Length: 362
Image 1 (tube, rainbow, N blue to C red):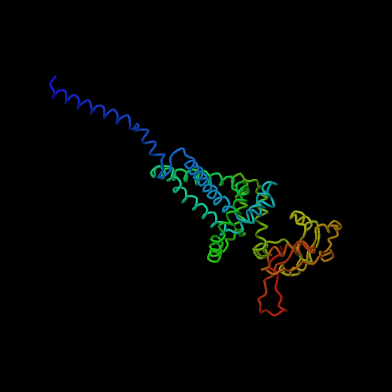
Image 2 (image 1 turned 90 degrees about the vertical axis):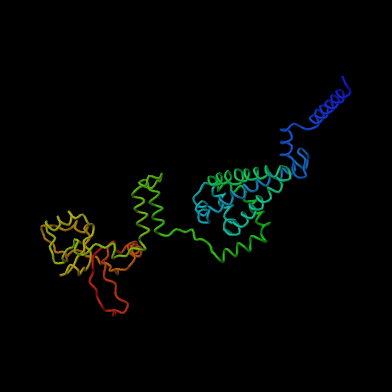
C-alpha cells in the first residue's frame, strides 16, 4: 500500500474512533429527554431539596383543594340552614351545625379568607414546580393538579358532604381566618357595608311553595299528605286573608226567623242541613240577632210547635270585614262562639253610633 493510501486509512480510522467515543460519551436520547424534564432550573432530581420542593408542591395542591371545597361547602350553608339542623337534625348534624355556625355568621370575611388562601396556594404552586421540573412540564402539571385535585374533586365532595367536611376542617378555617385577618377583615366589612347580609328567611308565599314541593302529590319524594299540605297552607294564609274573603254570603246562609215555629218540618230541615248552629234573625235576614244551638232542640217537642223565640238563643259576635282570620280564630278559641256575623268595616271618620247590617254569618 502506498504512503498516500496508508495516510487515508489512518485518517478514516481516527474519524471512526472519535465517532465511537463521542457516541459512548453522550447519553441515550430518551434518557436525555427524561433528565431534562425532571431537572429544574437549579435542582437535581433525587436530591433532598428536590423532594422537599415536591412535598411542598403537594401540600399546596392539598391546601388549594381544601380551600376550594370549603368555599363551596361552607358558603352554601346559610345561618338559617344551620339553625334548622341544630333544632331538627340528628345528634351528629346538631354538633356539626353548632361548630360551623359561628364561622358562617361572618360570611364575607370567611369568603375573602378562603378565596385568599386558595389563590395564594394556586399562585405559589407553579413557582415550586418550576424548580423541580422543566417549565413546560411544570405548567402542565400545575394546571392538571389544580383542576383535578384543587377544584373538581374537592368541590364534588363538599357539594355532597359540605356539613361534615366543614365541621371537620373548622379548626383550620379558624387558623387561616386569624392569619388572613389583616386583609380579610377590612375587605369583609367593606362588602358588608356595600352588599349587606342576605336574608335567608322565607316569605309566606315561598313557605307555601316549599310545603307544596314536599307533598306526596308533587312526586319529588316528599312525605306530606294532601291534607297536611292543605292545613299548613291554610294556616299560613290566616294572617293575610280577611273575614270578607272567607265569609259565606247571608243569602247563602241557612237561618231561622225568631218568630218561626219549631214544627216537624222546621226541625227536619234543620237536621237535614247538618249544622250545629243556626243563625236567628228578626224580620230581615240581615238582622241577625243570635244563634240557635241545634243540640238545644233535644228538649223541644215538634208537635207543640214551640216558637224559636222560646228557645235559648245565644249571642253572636260581630266582626269587621277587614279583620284577619287569625284574629277571628283567636276570638273563637276563647270559647265565646264558633260563628260570627261579618259587618262592613266602618270608615275611619264614621260616627261611633253608625250601625251596619251584617253581610253574612260565618
